[in-house]
Image (cartoon, rainbow, N blue to C red; front, side, top):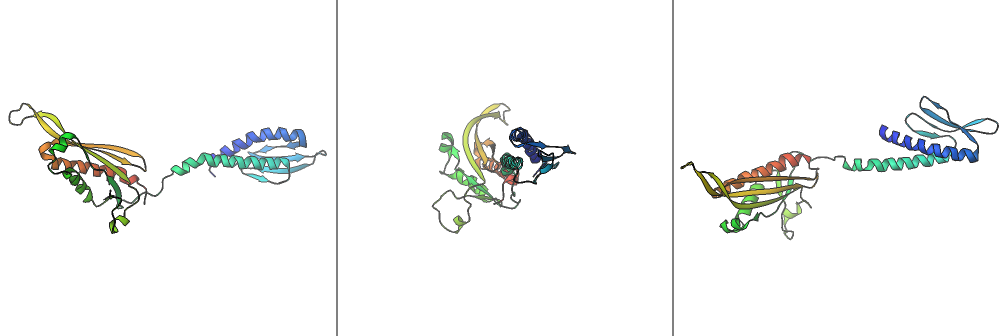
Length: 248
């Protein structure tokens, strides 16, 4: 039991003791309670003045019962049990939040990669349906630490048996085409161009965390922009989320 918990218990015991003391004194005779150097001893005093040690409490708040049949001792024992239960409930949330074992640096990070959401302009510009999603997925699949979770729950085979029940990280990408303004290198004048914008929301469940990543560039360099984008996302997963993920 920690010092804080003992002080908490001692405080409750002291309060309850005061109330119980006067109750018992009124109906069961008198008690004598000296306090020496922080240690409390409770004596029962009979009609002839003889004293019997009922219980004693040391400086740490630990109580020793000497006369288990005495009403005061029974009340003290019950009060102490209640105080310990209250202390246990008080410290329980802290124990639940205590960190467990964290994954090692070379352990895999299981990632659920959602298909990218394309805006209408990007859907029209995509020459082969699913090409952008495949390009993003291939960049993650090539990473030695990141392991993509298979999206198809009906897939069978050896690969599926090694997949975890849930992902450590969820990635939701979005790709769009937007008009952008820049400087024409030939004329030096402002000009309008078409830019491709990659965005992603990266979510970790344990511990809860959310990150947003974006990368943009000329629409004619979509492949190059895509690689820069996935590099950013993987860095967030490995460097920011990875060290805090619990071990599997």
